[in-house]
Amino acid sequence: MSQPKEPRPVKLVASLFSPRKELIGEALRLMSEEFGSTDYLSRFIPFDYTDYYREEMGWPLVRRFVSFEGLIDPSFLPDVKLFTNGLEGRFASAGRRGVNVDPGYLSEFHLILATGKGYAHRPYLRDGIYADLTLIYRDKAFRPLEWTYPDYGSKETIDILTKVRRKYVFQLKERR
Image 1 (cartoon, rainbow, N blue to C red):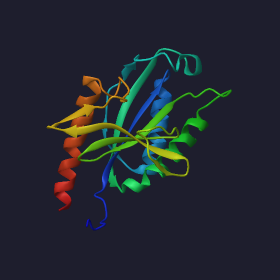
Image 2 (image 1 turned 90 degrees about the vertical axis):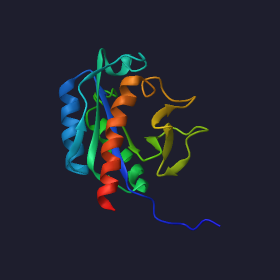
Image 3 (image 1 turned 30 degrees about the horizontal axis):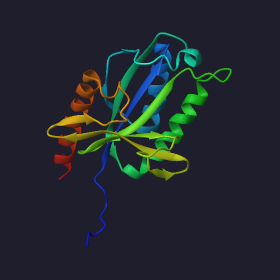
Image 4 (image 1 turned 180 degrees about the vertical axis):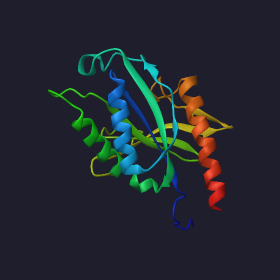
């Protein structure tokens, strides 16, 4: 029989994209006020894997990945998603988002993103939020799954997340 135990803390990460770099900066500032200092911030990356957001947000879109220094309890993810949904609403105009924020967390084993949309691979957490198993870490690398969005399965994104994971593993060792 397995014995329940507290989970290890995880690394809070997010992807932000917008047609306006300054909105990403402002959203990052507000996220830092809420979740603490960042310890990784990617360069601006063109977000051109899909034109799904073109009508709503405009074009071209740029993206940044961020991770936060403090580790969190994984059960905090719905609270993070509700906060970032509020940010998206704050920067919306006439029903159109100015910035898209996709929060999630890294553990030693996977990348989980938070979403408001349920599906077969998205177990329900609470408060209308689901966990999206996006990448798994196996054989010393992140691996996409059949449902992983192409941008998250790209070499560039996986390289970024691998850097963040190294930092996270180091933080876990420091805590022991």
